[in-house]
Each structure stands twice: as C-alpha cells, then as structure tokens.
Image (cartoon, rainbow, N blue to C red; front, side, top):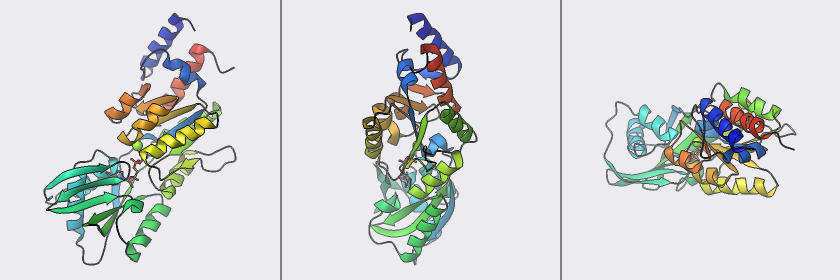
Amino acid sequence: ATPTALMVGTGRGAQLGILLKGPEVLESTRRVDTVVLDKTGTVTTGEMAVTDVFVADGVDVDRLLARAAAVESGSEHPIGRAVVRRADGLDLPDSSEFTNLAGAGVSATVDGVRVSVTRPSDAPGELPAGLRTAIDEASAQGATPVVVSVRDEVAGVIVVADTVKPTSAAAIAELRRMGLRPVLLTGDNEGAARHVAAQVGIVDDAGGAAVIANVRPEGKVDAIARLQADGRVVAMVGDGVNDAAALASADLGLAMGTGTDVAIEASDLTLVSGDLWAVVDAIALARKTLGTIK
Ligand code: ADP
Ligand code: MG
C-alpha cells in the first residue's frame, strides 16, 4: 500500500476509536486469522460482584470478608474490586507487604498474619469437604470461586461472578463470518470459561468450545506460541496486567482502552471503547486499506 493509503487508514482508524502504534500495524492486522480473547474484562464486563461467601468451621463471615478486603485493597483486579465493595461498611484491618501472585491471586500481612486470596488450585493446605463442594458448584455454574487462607490454612471461599458485555456475542459472530477463528484464553477455571464461551459463541469448526483455561500469564504466552506453531497468525485481545506478555508476543496485540496501562503499552493497537466490535472494525479496516488476504 502507498504511504498515503496507510495514512488514510490510520486516520480512519482514529475516527473509529482504533489507535494504532504505527501505520505498519495495519499489515499484521490484515494477516490475522485467529483471535484469542481474554475472558475477564475483555469478553465480560469485568465488573464482578460477590455472589456467595462460605466459611470453614469457626470462622466469622464478616471477619473473613474484612481480612480478604484488606488484602485485595492492594489489587486492581476485578475480583479484588468486587471483594472490597462487598466489605463496604466493615472495619478493614491494616495490611502491609502486599504481593501479587501473578495470575493466581494476592497476599498480604493483615494484623500480623499472612492472608492470601487465590485460585482454588493455588490455595495452601487441605480444603474442608464443604468448601470443596462450594467451589465445584460455583465453577459448574460459571462463577469464579476464590479461596481465602489465613496462616496457610483455608478459612473460606468467596464466589464472584461477572456478566458478558452486551456486544460480545454479535461481534464474535461477525468475526466468524469474516473467517476468523476465536479462542477464549483465561486464567479462570474451565467451568467459568466454558460458560462464557457458550454464551458468546466461541466455538471451533467442529462446534466445540474453543477454550484454554486455568493458565498463568506465562501460560497465555505459551498458548499463543502453540497456535503460531500451528501456522496461525494470532491476534490477542486483552485488558489486564496478566495479559501484557501475551499481548506483546502475539502477531497483533489489541488492548481494551478500558484496561490497564500495562496492557495498553504492550499492545500494537488500542480499542478506545473497550468493545469487541472495535476488533471487527480494525480487521475490516486493514483489509479494506491493504486489500484482503490473497
Ligand atoms: P483472566 O484471564 O480471566 O482475565 P486472570 O489471569 O486475571 O483471569 O486471573 C486468573 C485467576 O487468578 C482468577 O480467576 C482468580 O482465581 C485468580 N486471581 C487473580 N487475581 C486475583 C485477585 N486479586 N484475588 C483473587 N484471585 C485472583
Ligand atoms: Mg482480563
């Protein structure tokens, strides 16, 4: 394409709320054949809410929530924000030494004891049978259970749930009509991932859910590398700190403008609206500007 065509394409992109790092990004956008989508905050609103709280024997619900919220007040993650909101009105104990357990949860020292809030698979120690059941049921229903542990002992389970963005299903259907293959990639559990995939039509050619779940940030990078090794040209769409490495390693990284600065910096393209229709618009624009794939 001529420099003029690229400039016009870039300008048209800006009008559509698609910000390119440089005009050359249009070329990788045109070549994409697979669109990998992060779940939380990308396909879903990321406005999670606490739907249930379960405690181990002898644990007080408000005390558990207050401690969990004290830890989560250091987190930008939608789960953390949901827990802090749920503890509104409770007296939060002081916390220090906050640690982000990359893609697995968070921990901090609260009132002199170590408290963590993590994925069930990263919880320390034994899970009481009742809490195990609560976790399995929440996952089966498409929700996200996290485990609160105090001094390496499981104290309770907080269940959070999210809703899909109203535009996600239609935008993904359009991507499929354009010949693109969607894949859902998430650090969340398989049940929650499949539930969201079914709601928005993220399926493979055989009609099965195209889902890669339970992965850490480095697992997101590996998943993209595997798709690339299969000969796919991969776009990754994400919003979180945990998506940054994957966004940088994909053939094309697209950040939700509503997401974290780290994700935006790691990407080639920013979608101002945070709406998946902008992914459709970006690919259609690149195809129009540079001509469709031969
Ligand atoms: P996604 O890929 O869906 O955006 P993440 O990679 O951000 O999900 O998180 C993966 C999992 O790690 C979550 O489902 C949750 O179990 C756990 N997790 C991440 N951050 C937190 C947090 N702040 N508090 C509790 N659990 C968390
Ligand atoms: Mg996310």
